[in-house]
Image 1 (tube, rainbow, N blue to C red):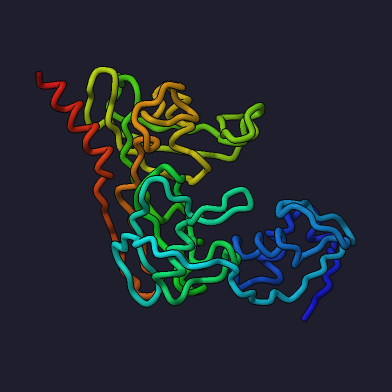
Image 2: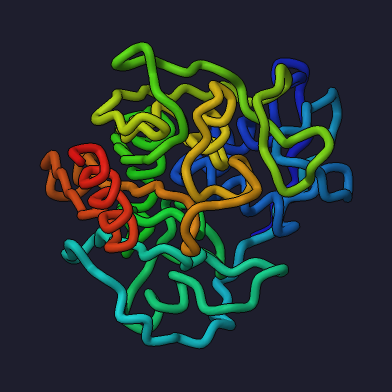
Length: 305
């Protein structure tokens, strides 16, 4: 049933999504609430507003019932590499070149299309275009991500992700050599002020923290592992470029003359999380793509000659 809520003095200044999470959608995740706002199920004074809109005294919040819509997506057999699967979730090793979910500007098959072909049930929290999707990795980044089969699992995984309790470790080949063996990049990330398709380290950005360790050195290149403490768009790519070690093969943040033809040498190789239903800590690993491995093998061979 539709609901109408008038903002009281004690709620003035709260974000709209925060207010709804605390006072209306108490059993849902923040992503569920934010999608409800974005899709127009929540109006403020009769208007669509941003999820972080600050509430004022006597604002009227109108909430429509969210109806489950049929997915307007055709399943596609992508022969996805399922590393693990049970009744509640699965772990996918995503190949390079595959976008995670559909968008208005992208009409090729995505991971979601493949999931719809292979998996009978997927969570609905993230909207009709992103069933099961708890987190993303870039199109040209390969590796592990967890997919939820039901809303209970999705909600708990989303909460754990927000609390930085899901550990994601990447391996990357970057330009240049490091003086240090390890370090932390703590620099806020937001939309690039001039280039719409890029992100950048900007003072007004959201907090972002990346931990890295040097695994091997090859003169002009270094092999590193990175662990995300936050999950901003393009985070590793932006942070490594920020410290003048852009990822090899990255056409957006690295040199214009890219090495390789399949995208950046960045692979989500390790994923660790607490299973929301089984109550077990689970860790998965996935080998880097053959193209990454072949380039690395050549660097190793060259370094011993």
